[in-house]
View 1 (cartoon, one colour):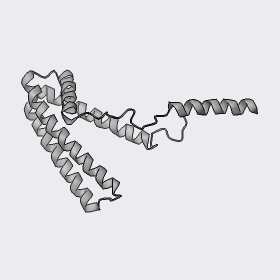
View 2 (cartoon, rainbow, N blue to C red):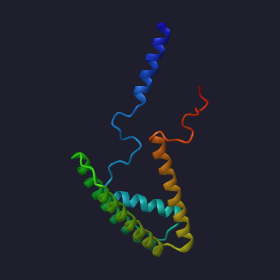
View 3 (cartoon, rainbow, N blue to C red):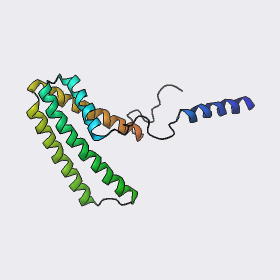
View 4 (cartoon, rainbow, N blue to C red):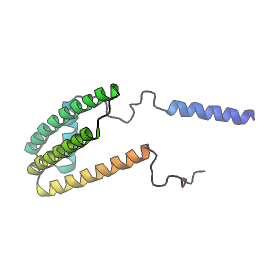
Length: 153
């Protein structure tokens, strides 16, 4: 019995040390909007083989987009800190505005990229959304094999 409790104690110790204490591991670090835009533009340059004029145009779009995203995140944080939830009409307006913004971004990107680059970019966006949805479902405990076990035990 002592042996079982000591193994359990050691196991719990390892698990507790493996946990992230500040909750920021895996999240983006606190880069400035300009730094985020530069990183995103370089990733796109590597993936899509952009020329220098395309890089400059996309960098400007990404800077503007990153600044607006940070402002929106700050307003959401302020709303959550006040424990204020938006009404359904406000949520509809926010989602509608977000979709309009995405349409504008997509048309700007389409005007900058060549046709083969644009199709590759669309594929990248679709794959990113799929990964984000899967990650969100896994974090919420909604994985596909939920309740079936994973064969370890």
